Length: 381
Image (tube, rainbow, N blue to C red; front, side):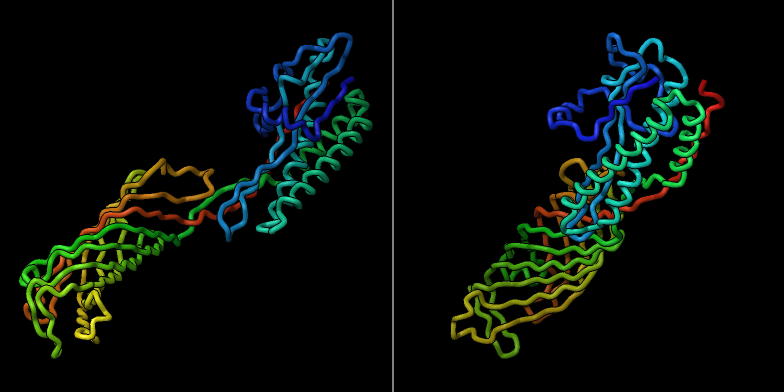
């Protein structure tokens, strides 16, 4: 009754043109219809021909996580055809069993690919699994054709139909899902400028320098480790621990902030993070080789508080099928901390930083098993 031409491996040209080919992915709810066979009927031929493809896709997630795997089976509607004399329910049932059989093997192949996890020979082993799956499928298709007589043996066709529907139920569909890790990491580099206030403003010029930072996030809470290196000059001399800091001395203030922040606003375009923490200020001569200033150091510990605004670059809309969760940002950071060392080196320091950085969370891949229950038709005569 029917003739089957199955496609195990398509040529590269056919694969590259797949976007323009009329395809239909297997569905438990959308069953085959006669209108899906859209190729012109071959002159002098009866029955039907069903073209399909079985394959897989792999997307990396991170260096430390297993890849995201998807397997698929689809029908080429523009290549498949049914003759005028075979346009009936039995022809549909026969080809639907074939389509369901391909789906069973696609699910089995996906389970085998998932079991490879992050194997360093994943690509080679995956190709071998695909080849063996297609070989096993081809053998079973031939057995199906032989036992059903190409669909002419109704009793055998119904038996195969029941068996394949049961196998679809017993072989759950492993639906690929993603979820972001609770832990994330960020880093930024930029420029920084300080504004001294109080007596400190009369003692040191506004410092300027380079900033960097490391962000370690757990959910919406962020640990901030932000060192900054400044250059400045003293405009007023002072004494500290029997050390004479002279007017005009070129100095190098180093700042280290360790804080805890909270993401109070987060959107695809921006996020806002207030924070509080600890600030270490270390003042040293810029020329450490100058014998006059050997051993000079002024250290000050103080609390700090600040605000961080990150403007996100690119399209950061959350997508469930994305295997990564990361973005680049332009950061503006404003902080203030008191300075209580020795008169007149006291007051407060307002710190402004602008820089470029990136943040990311590892998106872990999961596979949710979903069983497929397909009701059998009442009649396929």
